[in-house]
Structure formats: C-alpha cells, structure tokens
Amino acid sequence: MTDLLERGGVRVRVGRVSSDGVPPLGGTPEPDDAEVGRRFAAGDEQALARAYERFAGQVHGMAVRAFGPGPDAEDVTQQVFVSAWTGRTGYRPEQGPLPAWLVGICRHKIADTWARRDRQRRATEAAVTEARSAANTTGPQVDTVVADRVLLLGELEQLGQPQRGIIELAFFEDLTHTQIAERTGLPLGTVKSHIRRTLERLRTRLEVDGAALHA
Amino acid sequence: MPHCTPEQLSLAALREPLPETDRAHLDGCAECRAEVASLRRGVDALAVPQLAAPGAAVLPPPSVWAGIAAATGVTTAPRPEALAAAAPPPPVAVPPAPAVDVPPAAAPERAPAAVVPLRTRRSRLLLAAAASLVVGVGIGAGAVALGTGDDDGLAVAAAALDPLAGSGASGQARVVERDDGSRALELTLDAAPLDEGYYEVWLLDEAVARLVPVGVVQGGGDTTLELPPGLDLGEYPVVDVSVEPLDGDPSHSGESVVRGVLES
Ligand SMILES: [Zn+2]
Image (cartoon, rainbow over all chains, first blue to last red; front, side, top):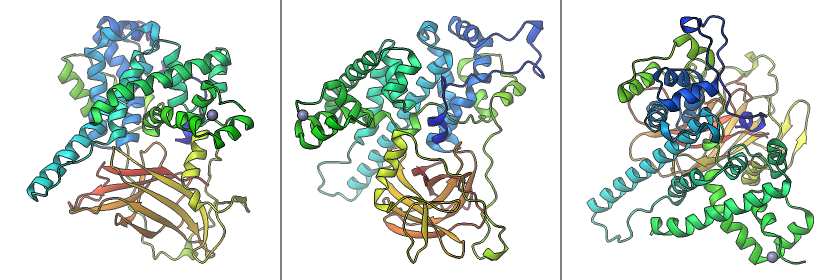
C-alpha cells in the first residue's frame, strides 16, 4: 500500500512497451495510449488486444490485491475487459485516459464481487437458520459497507470533471487537498468546495438509497 | 468560536489534519462532530486500500485472455512479449518457511527490516487503529522500536488487520523481537469459528504476488507464531489471514478474511 501512496504523478502507469524486441506490426509504429483509446472506443479489435497488453497487469494487480491470486481475481480482470469492450461506446476519451477508465470499471467489479459474496453469505446463513428452525425473524444482516460501496461507486460515475478527478485523488491516491491543488493546478478554494459538494452528494445518495437498500 | 466551515468539516471527514482552532472547536462541538461523522460514511466506504490506485502490476494467466476472447468473439490476441514487458510474471508461491526449530545461531546477522516511515494520513490512521499496541516510538540501532520491551520481546512492527470482502473479521498483529534475535508474530483474530477448514496466516509482499505461510490460527483468540529466521519483513510486510479448506492443497485458497500492512 505504501508503494502506491508514495508514488507521484498520474498513478495509472502507462505500460509503454519498448519498441526493441517487439516489432511493430506491418512496419507501422506502435500507437500511443491516446490512439489506442480512440480505436478502442471505435470498436477496433486490435485496440482491445493492445489495451490488454498495456493495462491488464495493472488491472490484475488490483484484483489480486483485493482477492489474492486465484479464480476471483482472474474473474474480475476478465470481467473488466469484457465489460469495457461491450460498453466501449461509453468511453469518452476527453473525460480521461483509457487506463483510468479501466481502473474505474475494476473498482466496480471488485465491489460487485464483495456484494455477491455477501449475498451468498446471507443465503447460507438463512438456510442454516431455517434448517435449525430458529425463531429468528430478523434474518442475516446485509453488510452495510459492502452495499454502500456499490451504490457510491455508481454515484462517482455521475460526477463530471473536475469533481470526479478531485475526489478520486483524495479517496484513491490519499492526497490532501493541498496536494490535489498542486497536482491539478486548481485553486485551493475550488478544490475544497468540490470536495465539500461531492461528500454531501455521497451522503445524500446514502440517505436516499442506502437506507432503502438496508431496510 | 463559531462552528467550523463546511469545507473544514469535509476535510476532517477525509481525516486531514485541521488547524488548531478548528480542532479545538471540533473537540467541544457535538454538532460539528455529527456532521463529520455523516460525511465520513462515504469516505470510509470508498477510501479503502483494495480500491486504491493500481499498485504493482501482476501478469494474468493466459486463461484470462482466452475468456475475454470467448466472451467478446474478438480474433486478435495480445502479444505475449508485449504483455510480459508491461507486467511481471504471475505470482509464484515461495516454498514453505523453514521449520521453526532451525537453530537461530545459524542465521546470518540480519539486516533490520527496511520499514517505510509513516508519512500519509491513512498510514497514520492504520497506526492509530493499532494504537493499543503502540506504547512509544523510538529509533534504536537500526531498528524502529514500536513498544517498550517486556518479557515477550520488543515490538518492532504492528498492523491493524482490516476485513476483506465484507468478511466481518478483524484483528491486530505485531512482530516482537526477543533478546536472542528470534522473532514472532503475535496475532489477535476476531473472526467466526469455522465449521470446516482453518484460518492460515501469511506474510505477503506489497504486490500480493509472493507469500510465506506463517501458521494456523483460530478465530477469536490470540496466537503467537514463530517467524522464520532471516525473513525480511520489508519484503513481506503484508499480514494476511485466509480461510483454507481441508483439501491437502498447501497453496493460498485466495479467500482472505483480513489483511493489514506491518508498520514500524
Ligand atoms: Zn460546531
């Protein structure tokens, strides 16, 4: 964790492939990440393979960090690329680079996997309760945080820039508002008011839908 | 003083340090504290290490691309050499740690664990969460001490163990070093007892790609596990507890219930 907390720069490492040892196809130079992103959104299959070459390691690294090496992590990585490809028209190059978009999808898949496990846990507990015919009317509890995560990641998707970038730097890169201002070049006051509005928005989402979900 | 500004309360929800006047007010004002707490629910849900920006890259096995190709119908394929250039080879489990009765005298003089100093907000919080373990911080000869010495040895690192995948489990771990140089991992695991299988403790590297098995524990109790002499905690700083089925397979099941990073 310290590793990712301490690295500077835009964190999604662009796994640029050095040209030696990897001959360009048909003599054409390797497309840069932005070009891969444009072709990906346009449905060029070659771009999916290029995106996988460059970013699958980052995505799988996140999945392995969450679930350990094994089938769960592999499922998440696979789902990220399948969802990205089938939903490629939703990728907006002007909203950010392709790897950042893939990382966002990966967060969803990780949160979805937690939620699925929680549902399975409750189903198992319910079955056990029933088998014991216990007079327990409450039933197994939803893991609130697990449910909150799925809800709030969806809410982050709705944010425009720069709000979304700002809150992601705070949440996922552990930057202070001062560091965010330095990184983005935005005034401190702007960063603070965006943070305020986003946290209020997340709170509202939890009050409105979180409560219903947990009822 | 008047209430803290909404902006300052948001920063407090993010656990940024506040100016002294705001901090003093917050200490005495239930209203402002309630506001921070209500904003913090979102922060706590999302600002977790598992969702943080990508760390070390891990090369997925070939079956992952095969699944993608099958699901999407694409006929292209990534070039293996290009993949390998962007990510290290897949996780390799290191051989099991040597038996604990290896004579410590045979171990070469160990370099002190290369421990990363605490700089960030969240790392400090991790430490705060383990505050009951931390008696004092002092810098000794090469080692960063985390506690006062007692009969069990000197605590040289500690970790709060956070739940994974909504497991509901939690725990704390610390590494103690005794006068003879031997080290042990003291673990408190608050987890449901298992009807089948067992909990196993591992030390992982930060990429969660290499791991050393440390021993078997019960949920809901304290356990002391000897650490192999020569094991570099700087290289394996992540404490992980997994649920292992009784299937005779010595590798990690992939089902972790808690995890935390040892900090000195
Ligand atoms: Zn107040």
